Amino acid sequence: MDPAPSIRVNIVANFIGKFWTSLVSLIFIPIYIRFMGIEAYGLIGVYISLLALFAILDMGLSSTLSRQLARLSTEPNSGQESVDIVRTLEIVYWAIGLAIGAIMAILAPLIARRWLTVSGIAPDTATRAIMIMGVVAAVEWPSAIYSGALLGLQRQVRLNVLKASATTCQSGGAVLVLWLVSPTITAYFAWQAVATLAQTAAFALSLRSVLAEKRAAPPRFRKEILVRNWRFAAGMTGISAITTIVTQLDKVILSRLLRLEAFGYYVLAFNIANALASLVQPIFSALFPRLSQLVAYGNETELARLYHAGCRLLAVAVLPICVTAAFFPGEILDVWMNNPDTTRNTFRILGLLMIGTTINAILTLPYALQLSFGWTKLSFYKNVVALPLIVPSLLLLIHRFGAEGAAIVWIAYNGALLLSEIPLMHRRILRREMISWYIYDVLVPLSVVSFVVVLSKACIPSNIGRIGSGVWIGATIFIGMAILGLMNSRMFLSLRAVHHEL
View (cartoon, rainbow, N blue to C red):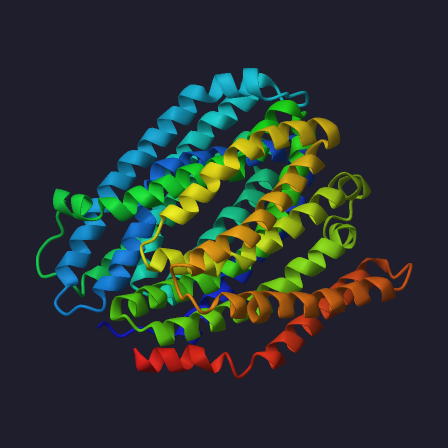
């Protein structure tokens, strides 16, 4: 097996990288809105939604690549196989990216003039912006295959350095362009196209330097690799398609029913919630390859130990932040945006989204466990069942409550999964671990954090000011993390133990 950094090193690298990318993204949002306005920021939300919808075309390839490279690392003399599978999926991915760009460019006039309700932006400007979005999507799409390969090869320190650098370049460069060149949405996306192309090139070159150590012959496209992995890839395609529809329906419907300005406020709340909850990704990225290796070895005892340790680490890292944001949405927006109108239009949406996002974060590692077994049917069928219920619920609640109605549906969806998916999963995988997961990995840490946050909310002084509120919120998060960390410190030793036993 190839030598790899310890799980702790990967987790630390992932957290630093994700923290930096989330921080940079959040810091610059108020500047974007100040330069372009909330309506133009809504177009950024349109791009995010379109790219997420096109994720259906991923066909499970990035997850397939990551899982296969992790499994191949346990086999001797598998270097050339690793090189060939990367080349095969790389070619497919570039073709998909170019197709996505062409589709977005063709649909740009229809989206700008028939779908969106635009008032402060000229339809021609919106059309040009969406066409440039197609260019950004085309060059951004292949970066997923390169990052998935680096993830599967457990080069996560390198991957996080690349991601942090790319995000800094994209966000910081956009501010300079808006300030010095043109404060318009088209200038913003033009810079994103340039910066994203540089990002994808950097990812590709870095991966090639890693694979150069493995290959015995030039990489080549091999159709049999696609045939061999079709079952897992097909399962991931089904999951991706139905999950994308379920999770993006709110933004698709809202972008049609609301004015672009009102949609911009929802996008702002969604991006904050998504950035805070994305801190779960470092743990997923570090543990998924290890879980896949333990499944390959058939070591169920160590698999269960690593699974529970990862879930409790996730609780320490994510729950204090997410629960605090759910209870302090107005204070967070005041500290960050310093714009009363934005706070007034966004804080309720943010609070509701954070509740659903907190539950969604809790379900991340059970999902990783399913994928490590190559089991994709559960994630597919749960959303097939949910979809007929979500569509009418969204239409009804959005009509009744506006954007807040979409956030309520998000809470109900994730709450239903928490109660139904876990029992179904543990009937097949780690059958004796369900009660332990519910009590010690979820209920206990969630109760502790909720108690700390509710007490903090009740005790916060009035007229504390923006700086005081920021300090108070930071202290609340720190106390929640410290208590959970002390409660689970012995459990976290499992992370190191599993690494040495592999």
